[in-house]
Amino acid sequence: MMSNTVNSRISGFHKMTPAERLATVQRAVGLDGASVEQLGKPGSLDLHTADHMIENVISSISIPIGIATNVKVDGRDVLVPMATEESSVVAAVCNSARQCYDSGGFITSMSGTLMIAQIQLVGVSDPKAARIRILEQRDKIEEVCNGCDPMLVRLGGGFRDLEVRVIEAEGGPMVITHIIVDTRDAMGANTVNTMAERLAPSIAEWTGGKVYLRILSNLADRRLARARATWTLDAIGGEAVRDGMISAYRFAAADPYRAATHNKGIMNGVSAIVLATGNDTRAVEAGAHSFAARSGRYTSLSTYEVDADGSLVGTLEMPMPVGLVGGATKVHPSAQAALKIMGVATASELARIIAAVGLAQNFGALKALATVGIQQGHMALHAHNVAMVVGAVGDEVQRLAKILVEKRQVRQDVAAEELARLRGEG
Image (cartoon, rainbow, N blue to C red):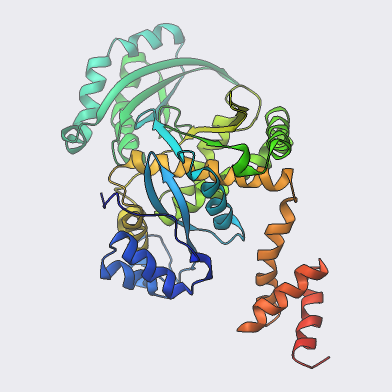
């Protein structure tokens, strides 16, 4: 882990050039020269590396990486790399984190680093007895699982528990075995899938049934990251703002149509860090949304309440299956540089930072919705994209974006007309 003396409160960071920001981050966290060189490349993945990551490679696509400032997690300031194409996401985290910085920032915790693999058994006439027969083999199952990855066991991980469920499905009952494995600093998909594959023939033999699927579950509810933060009335602008945000949260808690967009806002922050660190965005997203529906009704992942002092308290709890080893996290040099910037030493620490940023992103969206509306800040940044689409360059981008925002018409046709006027062509 890097030094704890990082200060995430960087004045004027958003006004710097990209090169100046990178140099500032380098000085702040002591980033090594190789990482600085990697992050300074226009397209940060060489084709040789890309060709060994996926099949049929022809090129790679670059997504902007921004740095969220003002973030304090468990008393430690951290600079957070976020990879996203969406305007206002990074800015929202910076602003939200600044507003709770003086009240302690984000307090986080983790339920553990356990992953689940499922083994599907069908074709047994006595499914309840088959369940018991599998449970009787717990010691053998532990031996087989741990034998698949002795290194994981030496690192303190390995098999932890066994669950067997009988579920009613179209076509008859299924017996579903869950092996629960501590994967430590790996996300663990390959590890638990290998264990499930190795166990499948034995489960069929013990029960007389037929095994089909042997694969992990992305509903990683044994790997929950939690974050909470307090925003004082002075920090957020008074009781009216607080009460509007509480009302917005209650709307999301009660209505799945609102909850879908509410949770998407959380994932704007979460997925940006997951992507920047080379982790599996689809796995995290699938787990988040299935967790939000675990009661049988899709609802908000976050909660908001008022404490005894009248401050707004936000909390977030969600599955966070991310790792520091394996997959693109180890292969992609920009992912490695992102991890160095954050100074994380364990997968749990990374997961907790991601949860904190998800809560910050959610707070920012709720505050905007409860006050000026989501469009004002979002469209101000989106105007820069529209300006570039119609051909604005250099100082024209800022000038044209300002015109579009003032006219409240952030559209390509309007942008083209205004650009022509700027250039004296119309």
